[in-house]
Length: 185
Image 1: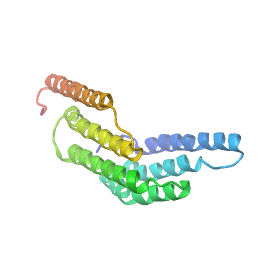
Image 2: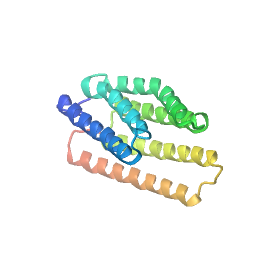
Image 3: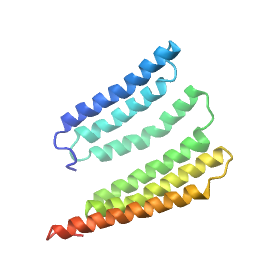
Image 4: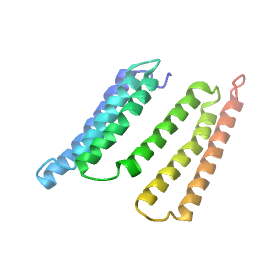
């Protein structure tokens, strides 16, 4: 996957962004609360994201595959630990199913990008409904956990945005393929 031409540069940029994303909440937390409390959550999340992105940025051939595999293996223990640290009771009703839905969606997106030989825009148009479905399923989980009903307007808006975005991506794909003779649509 030739997404990044200079992987070390992207790793340095991503690392700097992660340091800022950890530093800012830590400074605010310590300045306001005079102790390190809630900033532990973004610190843990950003650290996990950085560790999962390492193979993607450093390995040329199988980096995304290794990153997704690591995510699949670590997301549930990570969420369980966050729940235990927070003293909450959300892991089984929300964390477990939402993470499962998210991981399956990411694997499907990976398979689409890896194995379907279409224009990138068509692949994105195919993935967009998956992401909309992901959003709807996670919204349903949260509303069920909160013992509330999801607004029909929210569902219709999500579906409408998904259709418009997918059609836009198909049109862009068609336009870019049409301008490049000899390319597969």
